[in-house]
Length: 318
Image 1 (cartoon, rainbow, N blue to C red):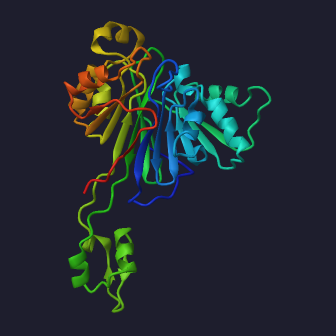
Image 2 (image 1 turned 45 degrees about the vertical axis):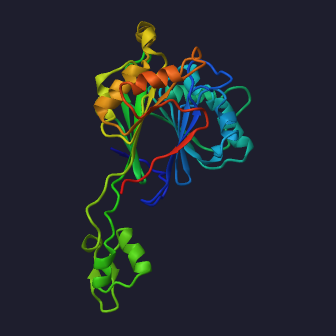
Image 3 (image 1 turned 120 degrees about the horizontal axis):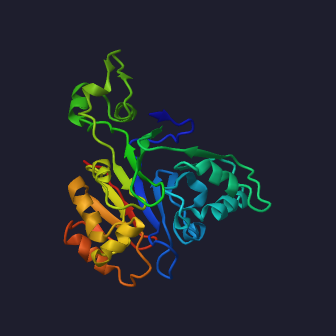
């Protein structure tokens, strides 16, 4: 497990939202831009894929692209990365001075060099490229992101964002019984800090808090054929965002081009026992997405085809 040098300090109560900036595949249409999913955790934005036009999608959303700290690219088909040059240059025109980290499969460093030498552009802020491999687990402050090699027709990765364990439930009656006054000492214990009472007695968090609780998990498949490894990778995730380029009538075309149908994605979600499935990378041929949503729901009921700019909150478990 790698410890990243520039994590963002967050509390365990951090809000976690997903914003679907681009839900289409191959090329933009009037209803769907190409692939880009933003995960907003507190004040930080982690971007997964950056198809052409992503910076304009940001401008039409409630997000600021200046809050992006990291961009994870699943693979190097244009509808997943061609938005990078414009976004990077726009950040500079808006006086960005914080580092930007780019992650992707082998070839990410060469691609980054090409992006940063296009035309007369030279970055004035640090842009740091990272090549990651199958099974690599990168630890940040409060969460980690794991990569999985998937089965597309070019090298491609899926990503799993897993939050760190959360503190257990705070037992207020017990705290009061131990003589802890309500207020700042409560807050310190909830953050895992030991407190000292006026009597000199030390109270440790384990005396007040229940068992630690799991954080939230989001899995993003990238482009892939159905594969067994994505099932284990997605096990018990709160949210699985899986590509669903075609319906089952086009299963052979999906297989030929390295993609998944709606029913196949739903089977993966069902076997992985995820909480909700969101289908993206919708082929431009589908003017009505309901055919995909209904097909998926016949297999796995909590399946959804999100619209561009749709936001969902991933809530903490009680």
